[in-house]
Image (cartoon, rainbow, N blue to C red; front, side):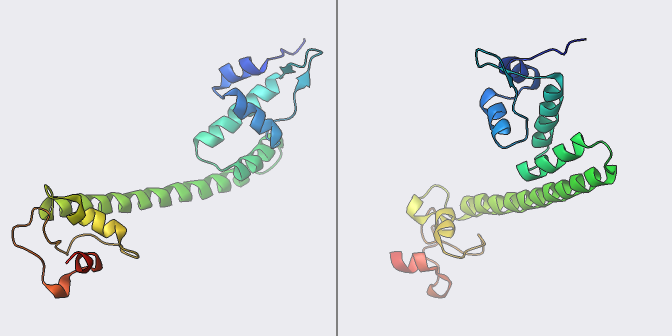
Length: 171
């Protein structure tokens, strides 16, 4: 039985990978160089299709290229321990969980920005906005707990002891 040969376009269509990505994977050694016809066209085998589908799924799960290379090696060598693959997946799972925690912290910070602005300066000029002020302060890691002068605040400026460097420059 002869093996079906796929063009790069067919390989792209069947895997959902775009052509430049396929060429890049060839360039960095994730995919083997394909056969070339006399007209220069690339022709891929079913094994290339399966390998590219595997690579694409690894990338969808967020594995970096260096880990994908290691996983492809395990994919190609069916005699290695499955625990090796599990360990790599565990490392990726740990990284995803860390990113999720960082995103939760980012959400909390952004919610504090929005709440602080709504309470202190919403409706005023951007020069008095506590969000802009906090984002522009070197080393600042918090928002809230301060009152900006103006910016919708009818109580007037905050006492000098609580003023930020930005407020002092304005004042």
